[in-house]
Length: 90
Image 1 (tube, rainbow, N blue to C red):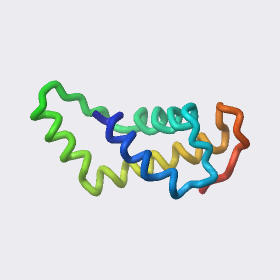
Image 2 (cartoon, rainbow, N blue to C red):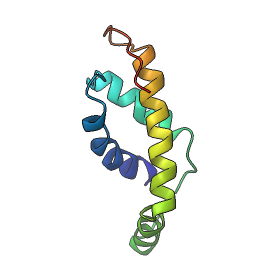
Image 3 (cartoon, rainbow, N blue to C red):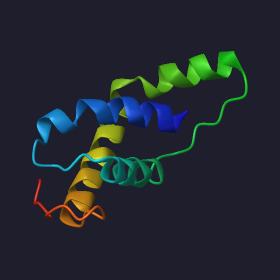
Image 4 (cartoon, rainbow, N blue to C red):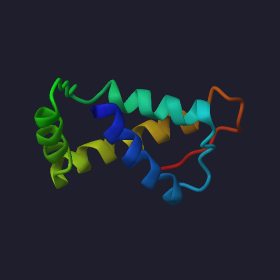
């Protein structure tokens, strides 16, 4: 569940960071960085999925996710594995 929410939030941020590479490798690295630093949210029923989606959709949870994603963008931008030129984003 956390992975899907992180992917959705990720799509909103690169527009604000035009110098970030954004290739599949860098995108994956940012998402893995973020998901590894967030609390897991496992669900096994559709009701649990809806409740978790509501919780993760709160402003506080989105802010936490955005902070972790931006940190991931910064770290990956400084040392991209894809071979792109390192950039200082923030």
